[in-house]
Length: 234
Image (cartoon, rainbow, N blue to C red):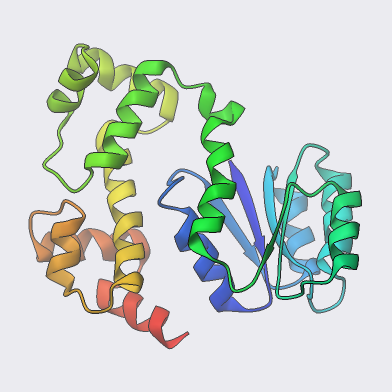
């Protein structure tokens, strides 16, 4: 699923991404600081969901929402704003937004809104076996989880699970597990500044700090420390 995040504050964009990604590690995120950049993305990428700040430079988030809806008739819109004005809420309702969130974004409220997408058509397309396997990964990612163990838990042959997982999810079991571990580590690095890098590695299923740091830098483009320092400085 392609998700557009629009806000003129970089910290807000980063916060939304790291709150959402652990729940949906395979979603692709596109970020824009204003309506013009958002529309440039919209013309190149089929968008399914957009989080829009109302108070943007140039056109407002509500105007942007109308333009996005004209290009992608099935796009779902979520308004994120510091304004708690009923007039904005009424305009949002007319626009057909699916939710209206006020800043600062509270993680529990965002999670409640996102739960519906765990049952969305894109996810319900997974068979029961693959859905069960993904739920186990989300619960046990910090443990020494391998394909044989996972197959035993869902009561099928490991070779068959490997093939079906790749066919339905688009990546292998090991790739999906690694992606999920990295996304959770990004969240832990910011949410728990008191945890050492070694602790974050251990809590996300990596058997050594060195291996964790190597993989993290390869995937994210920064070391875990650089990522944490950037997040805390934003």
